[in-house]
Image 1 (cartoon, rainbow, N blue to C red):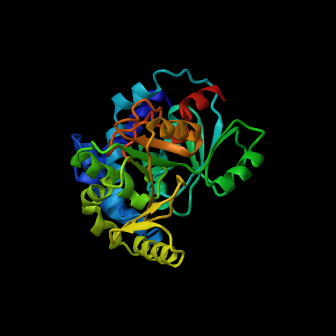
Image 2 (cartoon, rainbow, N blue to C red):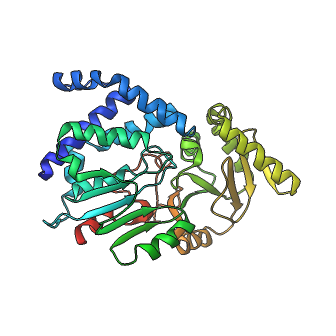
Image 3 (tube, rainbow, N blue to C red):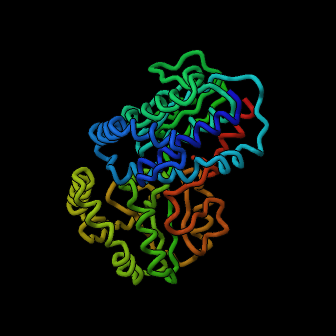
Length: 354
């Protein structure tokens, strides 16, 4: 397949995503008929994904699909790959996917295919329903995809690997895949630094950064630096819109109740607004339904700390942090661009050099 054919196929996939998430019919009558014929299969895949992983609510699935639909245009895909020279020789690239968010492994699949390689896909059991539906759909566009994208249970005969997991599994991956080119991703999280001048709209948008996908992603804010304790009531007021959404989800509510009980028993210092716990803690990572916080007096100390610990950080939000290489605007952490790479490792550059 040519690169133009691959881009065209993913563009069609993007139109399907828009059809699913917004019921937007494509301009092409041929695609209208094709998508309409898939309605039953689409509904089954989405319901199946939610049934097997209760964190995958329809709202979050549609949010992920809509964000991908914005990215999968011919213009965006062509611009993304335009700065790279890919080798003529196809390589077999193993992709070990995570499953914490809907389609979290799709970016790696997209990169491998657009780089002209073959993808050996080992899905997570937590996110295989949607991924398998997508792979099957790509097969309907061009039969050659059956050789380019293969769902596997065991990774064999590979030339390179992209693997995502926890810090513990990363150590295993690094040892097992040490003899081939690899990208091994570990746990990361995101941080906000507030100076007290934030608008209500910015703080509401921060709520999206914290609670979208129930805080399960590396781009979710799990730590906030406040300049003053007086900022906290305003922060709580502006995130209230998320309260009903998260606390009415059984798994989130169970985590909230559990962590609250643990902190009460341990007499920990925390604040509670009935759907999230704000805990005074130096750690960047926090449990589900908890946001760690600190009060800072010296902004430069915070900036230095974030730079020194950037191997743990995916995004940094805050009006005083625009000079940080991981800076993202309020409300944008969950809508990454094609060029926003996990662990800040340029996947296309890696694929161009293997």
